[in-house]
Length: 183
Image 1 (cartoon, rainbow, N blue to C red):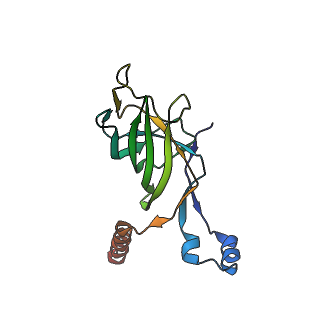
Image 2 (cartoon, rainbow, N blue to C red):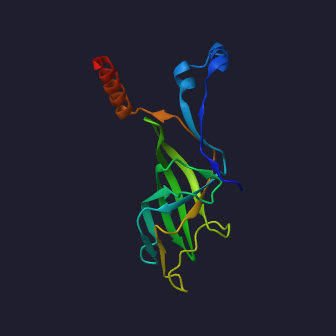
Image 3 (cartoon, rainbow, N blue to C red):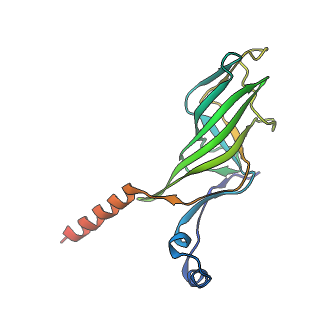
């Protein structure tokens, strides 16, 4: 499948603004950008630091994942994203389930923060559910390294509205103050 950038959609512009407002939509909600991924979208990720699993310690909670640049998934997240996930060694497969996503999308000097719940599961390069991350033939130990990318497939549509961004407000106030002081 072709690699597509993540769609940040603006819900209002020009003529459509009056149409949507006349339909009763709130301008505040309607004007916001939305971070959107469709059901079953695939994104390529990797762990931030090495994570090990064994028969004695088959679970790992709160793994941190990051999007992979120039990835093979069909959608790309902004480069400044963090995903939390849980892992479970189940036989010879490592099950990874993503739970949350936080991204900072930047455009010039502007930035928006998107954060929310995510339902996605890991699939290996062979298309099978879970990852083959065995260290030995018996799979008594499994390890994920930052150098290994894998695919997360969404289990439902994702639509995140921008969160409050205090930094953006402070920067805007600074720019206004600088403009007022300029001769």
